[in-house]
Amino acid sequence: MKRWKISEAKARLSEVVSSCVEEPQVLYNREKPVAALIDMEEYEQFLEYKKSQRKKTMAEWLEELDEIKKQEPGDFELPPRTSRPIPYLDEWIDE
Image (cartoon, rainbow, N blue to C red; front, top):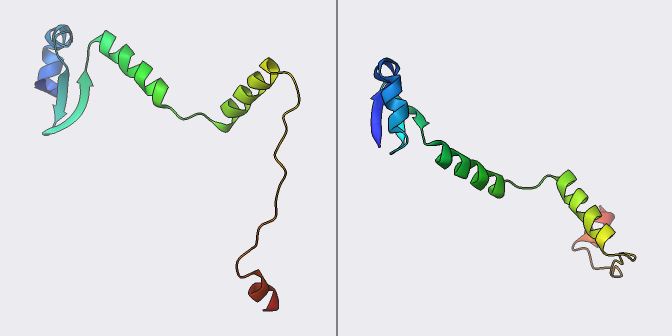
């Protein structure tokens, strides 16, 4: 991985861009990495990975549930609810 100061990268931008095809080019500002130039193919792979790792929103889950319901006709039945004891309920009510 090649390191570049920002001022050096600006002066040699064409070289930095063409070098990123071979390996990532990291830009530094005051000894801290601030950016990286990577090959477009690697960037597209990163976007696909990021998309696959993203968690679904509630709206997306509901949309997916609607699709499943459309594909599988019939009613969706919930199992019967059962009561369960609530710990400390009697003590809480007495207060």
